[in-house]
Image (cartoon, rainbow, N blue to C red):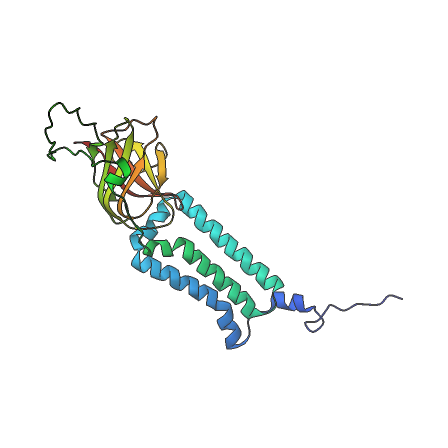
Length: 259
């Protein structure tokens, strides 16, 4: 004689099975379930409303699209794991809201934070920069040895923003030892995550693919100096480029002209 086993009813299913199928019930649970999404939409809505050009520039970059896709996938996986293994809805909400805030801290907040770095040429080179058109007064001392050559500006450029706000000078300085230094002079560049300074051969270059990475951008405001590698002999018709590594987009560039 065989015993017929009936299918499990909702009352006989395990708590985990019921939790996997159950939608939020009541106003409180719906608020808890939707709070992370509302927080994310609010942050991104504010970002697009106040930084629309910068935000949409990321759509031009495959790297940015992949970063967004990866973050979205990670968020969905986290939400599924929390829903599967954490029974208390407010605990899940707290973790997801925390993840949204971490995302905002690393990817959104840098666009609103200015970082000023001001370096003095006298401190960097041990002398003032010899600029064309600037008279230099040298005291005449009989039988004195000639004054040693100091740093000399050989090119000049002005930053133009690429879907970002940008202003200020970008010049090449020839050091007494023959090497080159990039001078970013009184710059004001719209900030963002992970900016780098590149030197690219060509006029009005907007890609870093054929460029030489010089260093991290020290600050989006102020005056800064960056030594160029010894094997790079740049000059007129080269471009100083500010590049966002996180999203793979250009931020600003300055084509060099002779002085």
